[in-house]
Image (tube, rainbow, N blue to C red; front, side):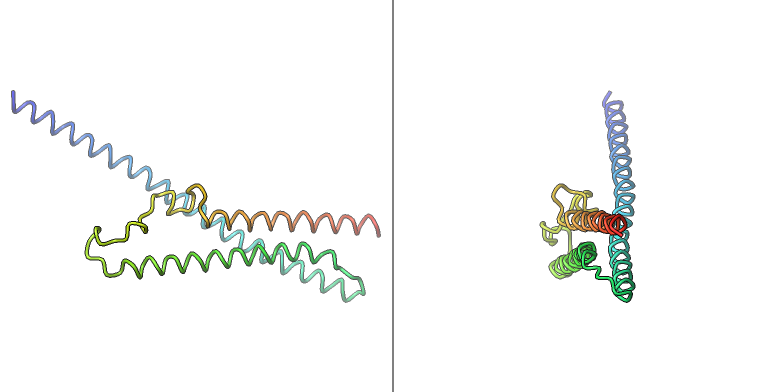
Length: 163
């Protein structure tokens, strides 16, 4: 009877360990996928705001040559530039925070030596935790991009209807 109980307990323990491994693998694969999507979104914001700022500058330069005064286009240009600046600032802050975490923990000899404040959940690692500062900066940059596009379109539409 004791042998049967031990065998049953071993099977249950094996099942629980295997089940835990599957759950962790599922979370890990979703975390990796979210990290790729997040990185792609960040790169898109960099390229979108930078490209839009350059395009707006080029347009302003071309119209200024013809004697037109494209002052209203400074609004979308400013929004695009603020979007680029917010991405740059958030990247700088992220690098400085990672540097600090590495500096705090580089001498650790075991997990117990690591600073507990540097431990992150999968959501925090990816930047999707509620209130995550990186996501807030990225959202702000995205709002600047969309607002710059909308304002630029309105300005151009107004100029077309007036001219």
